[in-house]
Length: 256
Image (cartoon, rainbow, N blue to C red; front, side, top):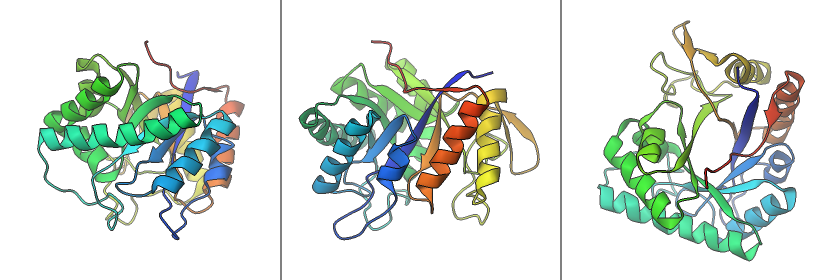
């Protein structure tokens, strides 16, 4: 049974005049923030502002790297080679690290977003490229990926500390992958159901699958999507439920 877990959120996903999410509300309740780096969302002003918010809240700052797909919010797959994946990962980490340094914070982790996340979960070559870029920037960074997938395995091969991630509000397939967002029930909209799923993962190491089965699932961190409606309220509910169940919430810890 997990006694300690990180609660992370994907934030900083506004762009220009377009505002998304309740970043300040979410940051009051999570322990780690994955901040968009400009490829799927975010822009320099948003990145700076979000890093500052996270640093003032005492929340660990991470780079939420993505495919270059602003129009599709990083959720459309595209073909890319290992060298290109390495370069775009390194570029985004470096950009966010600059804002973290200016805010007096340190970059703690890297988590891919959307299509890049799901592609790296099943493709070891892509996963190795992301892991190598992360290590080459800073070997103390933690690589976050879908639990029991190719990405944390690649991080371990690269000598990085890794975090196996689970989702409170995503439906799971029997093989441990996430139900594709194109399916109507891919996202668990009901807050009570999402909280119950997070509690099952954190306290029993189990998650119900879409086909009615039960899957064993190790998790070091649970994600709160910052773009869901009422994200701040959801994060508060989730935090209270986990603490009430005896789970300690704390940021991820590097081996270095």
